[in-house]
Length: 189
Image (cartoon, rainbow, N blue to C red; front, side, top):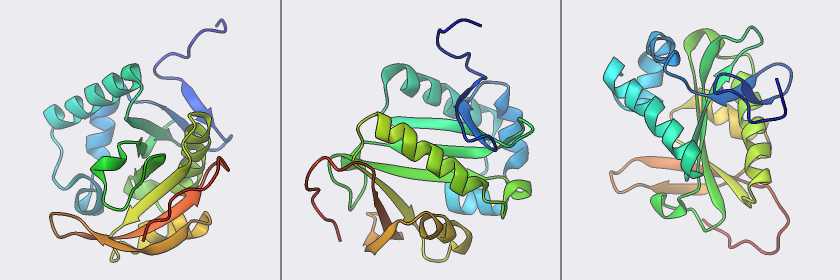
């Protein structure tokens, strides 16, 4: 293959263990098969259907083509199996506690992939991707009761900076990590 852009099913980023790539329509069934109670509770807020996941894949492709603000990557394990996703959103106005230059980073793993460090590896790859796009700070928001998810920002050196309450009443702990040293960044609480 030449030096052109990678195919949609090829890795965009890899650390040799996990890879981030574009979602494709072939991932719809795999994503649905990976959903469980934790995925629905902490990530999607509802049980997925072929239609809702197809729309998610279409939105991910559209956002990629338009440069964002939301970029969603499929996360693969060393065998190339779909094990979850990592997403960034640079629409700082859409998140309580975010500033211009921030990217909200979220992630979700299917049950068989949890507890193996794959989420941390995927988030680290996303940080590199965001750095390359000039994002100054990564922000991870986690509901306090989501203990598995809390381990990721803590493991990766994010600084906990309090909590925020969303308009719907959901409380999130906020974790920040500077990605570039492009001058002073306003602090959030």
